[in-house]
Length: 550
Image: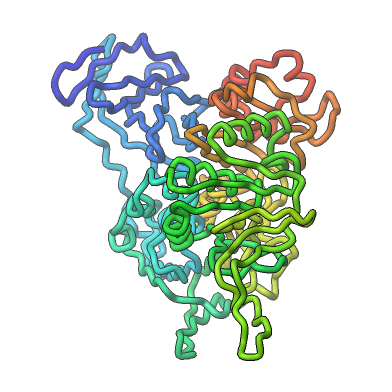
């Protein structure tokens, strides 16, 4: 390969396997990706638009080009987006077949913009500015919807990337403006009526109607052709005493992250909860390097215990301990104690709200842990109160297109929907974005887009620059098969519902074995996840995924 001009690159056809792909890194750090099917070639920007991964290091399965990092998936012939967490397709370049070589013109980008001329006389209202709401609006505009779109958010900020609050923002690795989804002017560029600081007080599903109540009690009733409810989740606040003290925080919003960032300087931080949010917050604060100490309290004897095995958990614990984090396991919090109590004129203690600053955490065994701030990582609950007539104990039941009623959709953290793994409610970013893609396709009646039943869950956690990725959904990690060494961040672990030899894997987690996890995800998506016997026999998962996709 050689540069013929500043804008063209010459690539030998023989370099590219039939039915495969190959990437070429340029001197300016850009990457060109070439896909091949017999004598047909296509050229794309080879960096994943989500986080810049080299797509050539991923996997091609049939017409699917899959990112090795976060499993964003693109069509191999036109670069269109098939699967998030990427939110746009790939830039495609013009190329010329010159006999034995291909001439790629990186200055000539193929314009794939779609005219927004569909359903121009309709109105879609979206309640919620999180990932699901954003992706619905964004996908509608990128796939031809020409009607009016109104997105209503109680937040005072345009939609932003919430997972990066604990993965990057708290650590000081990413400024606020970089978290904005679609950029600072996304709404205006996309012709979306973005209404911030507005609270929807009532949803009438049968009428496709919402009611917005302002601070003066005035009611604004609006009806749409399509109504999308994506109100997300809110932190669960444990019932123990002291949770309303100054210095007790949860992390859900940008404002939460800013408060924690400002309050944690030179402070003794105690985190309650050993799920991935608690672990990410600890990692981010360590990387920021501004706290006096960090202690994590967990009820179990391991971290992320509902997700990974004890061996993987121990590797994560060691990673944190090597970075100065202290753990207290098998412990229950009795109360968060205050530095002092306010009293009234009679000398009696006032209510909990009158306590001053956090002074520590008292455990059920009587042990006192000194603390200046406490961060609660104790889970979230779906915000389903607006759909009270359809409440389910664990979310709103919808169909494979996220539809609740004709023209009414419930998605994101509130939706209990059927995916490839069965009916479940999952609080992960990629799932929320999937919901947005599926809902937009349903509104546009686009049957070429996979329904949710043809998709699988995926999430990842970033801790000290290490990315643990998890695909699928298993009831327990305790019937697993571990390959590799978690301590050296090189493993893949498969999870099963039982110990049967013919039981198929339901999920897998990995550090450092990106292609194997991508291959597993594709097999799982297609209903061909490997059995315990196959994995124990040395099953070549990458080869099998590619064979089944041909």
